[in-house]
Length: 140
Image 1 (spheres, rainbow, N blue to C red):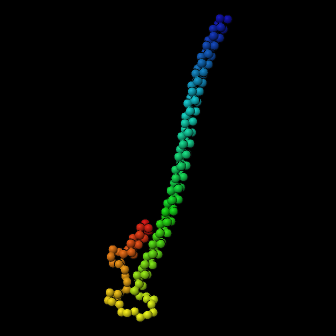
Image 2: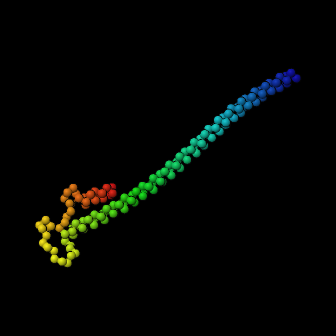
């Protein structure tokens, strides 16, 4: 009987130690679960913030892209307009002194008017030179 009681007490002691070890392990695992749950919440918040920042950056980029596309379109239209103005001016200067619309006889002009009107093209490039510079700027 004493042997059986000693064996039972030994078994009870072993089982109690096993239960205590398991309870300690449970407590440790519950602490780990709580810590990991907190980390998950923090990381979820960080991911949400990054998603919001990425969405905002995408929106800003789309707006900048639209603005740039409009700027390119405007520059192309301006380049076309400058090219047309150059064509008109070159035609004007080429024909300036040749055509007269009057039917009456003109008195003989002084020597200064013997050549067709050329404007001030020789000085500083004139209007055509300026327009050619503007056109090359728009072409870039």
